[in-house]
Length: 168
Figure (cartoon, rainbow, N blue to C red):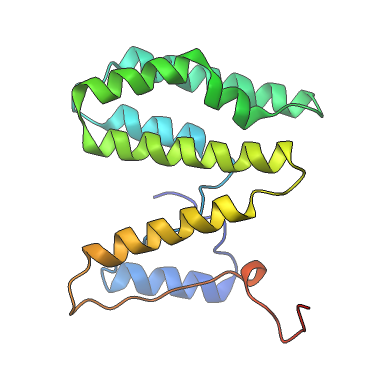
């Protein structure tokens, strides 16, 4: 139901079709796509666990406005702006008070990804170690939830793998 930005082309379409046909769960370990923050607020809004939906709507509008500013301005740390915005902090406080694990997980993922992108912006591309730690912790979490009978397929994108060249 949702676009997966790092799957493209006929071979990836076959993989996704096979995943759907065999009822395989697809789990992302890497950071969220740069444009995913509105999707994540939509996912929060779909939850029925006592979240104040007006806070989610305010956060959604704030994030949409940040995307618009980012389009117009060359030097704007959009993710840092969202991460430090009072609206997101208020939403986080509200979610922590109702103890909805799914909402907390979505919000924590959003915050971790905003932090990675903000560090990348502020440091001119140096958020690599934070991103590696995020991927590692996501993998360990998923691995620990699996039963010994389950199988896992790991797909690593071409940007993250060496292509037969010396890296030194």
